[in-house]
Length: 260
Image (tube, rainbow, N blue to C red; front, top):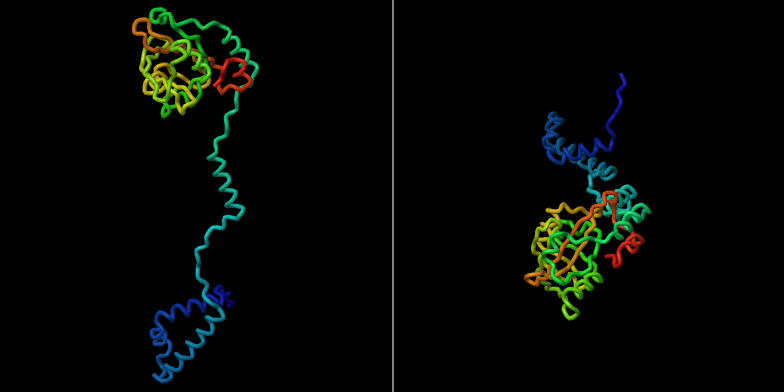
């Protein structure tokens, strides 16, 4: 019967050398029991020389930890895909004619003051400004409503006078919702150039009025309270369900006098 040798000469040599190096005397006791001590020593010496020569001709291949080569196409491709997943694709803006027509018609309507304002507002009230709610305006970790600098400047002049300015420290104001509910917020300049209404009061206002980014548009008044003369704001909400994205520059410029 013919048998097939499945083990190479290199493997036999390597395994033999390893085992012999561990227990050479034990191996020779098993295979050289009939030899005299002198013959056994001579045979052991010859076998050692043979194994050393064999190991030099067929060195044992040791496994090594190979560091990943970053230049390999496969790994570069995976790395690029991971980076792409991390990058957030910018949201496409709404530049449709339908949205433009909708908002132009809405903007033409004269915003009526909420009924409760008639009882609260004295002789000083600003012209209303309008803005589209953005994602950052309703984020829980932001707690602030960003307003347009040019529009706020006009509001402040109409209500507080040209000499008064809103600094980075700001001032506490009362803000009324469309149902007459009121909360306290800070009205200040954020990063010097950006006016905001902020604080836990705005966070509660977002929750209580179920404000949603993009589809909700605000109408904002600034006024002095009839009795206390304090600075106040009133905010009314209009929801356009068909608007689901930020407006393009073209539409913003057409709809708002000073778009944010």
